[in-house]
Image (cartoon, rainbow, N blue to C red; front, side, top):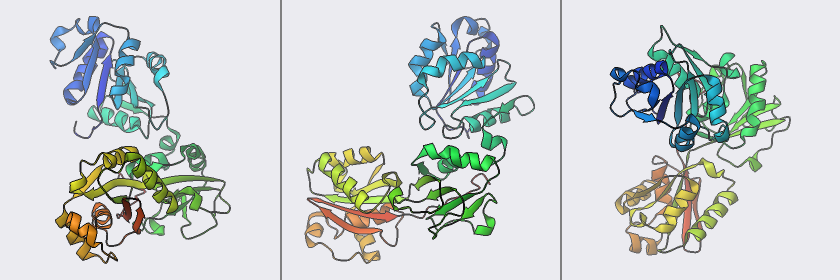
Length: 375
């Protein structure tokens, strides 16, 4: 089914479970199917995919081998077996894969682990929708049961990094208990306050929170926030900043990483708000820049001198460097690259900051935060 995008494993242990696994396997050609050999061979005529994998080892041994290889698991067996088997590998809701459990007849599909961030709730519902007259999704997440906003799910759907997830429980707890939550959002592309969910109160451009529980949606670092009256602040950092960089050949990864950390900190930027590192194409294979992109966990994008020159001409980027133009063919590398990386932004958050052999610039793309992403 096309709307299930995650790398998925379907695992079954019994004869009935194998039949159900094969039935779903026909609808999920991208999924890998793991069947207990002795059960799978009881119905050899049922095999519909030549690539299904049969295993003879204990389930615990199989999961030890494959648990880190998949984004989601459909475990067709008793819930207790799954709980005992995956327990040693559970780390944190920000890292765990989606795990759903299905009975061997496919009557119920239970979201067991990583319901929001991992996508188990959505996966369970998608599997149930494949056989809507027979299969029922079982979802126990409090916000879903009470049909309340879930800011971990909203963060995922709006491409935001959760900076302090330990605060999420207070925000979710307030919402499910019927309390209102204040929201301060730096993004301009928001619905009007009249169209906001009734549970939320807008407090942007204010220094006092009208509610004890507050969600801040901002690319700035938390040290910049000052809200009197807020007891718990959940910080979501929208991935909306393009970091442009120019450097001389051979600058070390250590120097680039150190300079980038200082640049972001001095401008009070939350590092996870950076979603792209940008430079000129002659730097595409520069080891230090590749290492910096890996350190920031963002893609490294490059542009030609002609593209950078055109962007420079479209914007007033201050003083140009004759030396840079002579060496690269464009008067601006970091600033123009940042603007291009931010969907051709018309202005820069930070035009230029120089370090030994390194120049950084920062631009912000338009980033829409939608409280109703499924509509």
